[in-house]
Image (cartoon, rainbow over all chains, first blue to last red; front, side, top):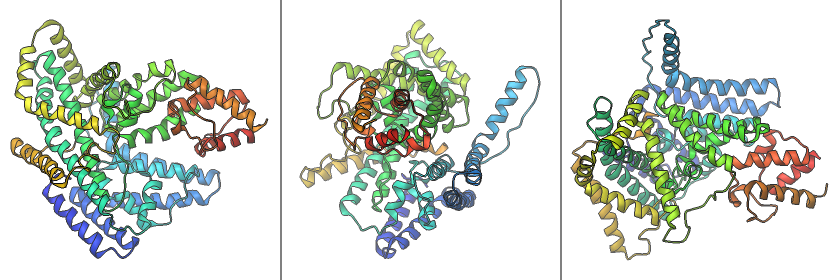
Amino acid sequence: MVFNSLNFAVFLLLVFILYWFVFKKNAKTQNILLLVASIVFYCMADWKFIFLLAASGFINFYLAKFIAQKKEGKIRSLFFFSGIILNVGLLLYFKYFNFFIQSFVTLFNYSGAGISFTPFHILLPLGISFFTFQMIGYLIDVNNDEIEPTGDLLGFCTYLAYFPKILSGPIERVQKFLPQIQKKREFDYGMAVDGLREILWGLFKKMVIADNCAEIANTIFNSSAESTLYSGSTLVLGALFYTIQIYCDFSGYSDMACGISKLFNIRIVNNFAFPFFSTNIRDFWKKWHISLTSWMMDYIFTPLSFILRKYKKTGLIISILLTFLLVGLWHGANWTFIVFGLLNGFYFIPQILKGSMNKNKIVVKGRLTTLLKEFFGMFGLFILISLTAVFFRAENIGHATKYFHDMLSGLIYSWGYVQTFNLILSQIVLLGVIIIFFIIEWLGREQEYAIAQLGLKWKRPLRWAMYFAIIFAIIFAIVILGGKEQQFVYFQF
Amino acid sequence: MEKVEILEKVRQILITVLKHEKFEMRDDLTASDVDGWDSLTHMEIITEIETEFNIKFRLKELNKLKNMATLIELIQSKL
């Protein structure tokens, strides 16, 4: 049951009415409803693994209590490392078992071993990459005495299974979420309206931009695996369309998750902060998939760089490369994701060697215009990210290398710009919409989401005209695509 | 060592690592208040502090730091 479906709209309406009119008595009844709704939501997506989710909740809840009850020592460490191994083990088994075995077999076969391996049929529980990371973070924070373990089992299970975030994040921290649901929520009209606006914007990003870009990107990428139908410049365009697709797909989903949560007066972390307006890789990763990057920096990079601190900049470089290798691997069991992660890690090296120079800021805050230098910085970074995204999209390393080979040889040796120009002409409406979209994002770059403040000071009819325009664009996109709905990209993780 | 002396040494370390002086050394100063003080530069700063004061931190101690005041207290406790 995806967010942009009629089924989900009915489900959400039902839960909303029950939450505010029937189960409104106190925090406990509200949480019971949210938990039941979340279980129903998860079962409708994938009922087979609901018991795994439940077991994860119970085990981690009690493990955290056991850890906190013991002083530092062997028993405490035993509970802690058991928890880590259990959660990581789940991920390794369901997500990476076949990949690691296949990789070892391939390695042995290079020496002529001649081993064959038939992958096991292992189903991937939905949301496993997200909820296991939440549990690992929780256990680490308790073990480090940064937080007390909660004694609220209902609240904890609600936090774990919470339907707006269970399938594709954000990777929420328990200390930010739990306090919100441990008190009774009162209906906040302003927050609910803000939530609806954010849902609308997320739907627009997903259904108007992401799904339309996906049509083009899929055609180019799928064809490029076996043939050389497309010119070098068209392959570049394919990478650009894919990057816009994945940004609008995932940030659109995140907007919807945040907006849905606001309807229940609960705030979850925003996963994107206009990353394409960054002028360097460090800023970019502070604004892209924020919950994952901050998780990796807090629980992987910081401890690693602490252990390696005597090696100074070399230690930092090793730490960032290993961290981003894991960022890549988190996305999927494929060497393409590992290469994707490592490349992003390598991009940090010049900044690490040069030393701190970049401000954690919103580009040209408070000004409508930008310096030419920063514009080219943003554009250059966008191109770099798009080219790196080829590894993210490619089926395997062979596909990615063929893509780059065809792209480069096409750009250097053969003139296929007519093909690219015709493609641009055929997508002129979409490109126009994308340009308008990025203008709106630019104007709203200091807000929580692009249209957070847009139209709030307008007269009501004009504001409603804006809503209708966005809704019309969404319906138009559905009609044009003729039902070719694209699954959310991050559901596969 | 006096708190004032520790504060000044830490201030110089921040200037050296972050390459600017656009911050005020106050008790409630946090990393998010200072341009460029993030995960990447944090460990550089910590390493320089350890070298300057000839002390060793534990990771758990660093994770519990809330602001400049708690950092100074931690340094003082190790001197």
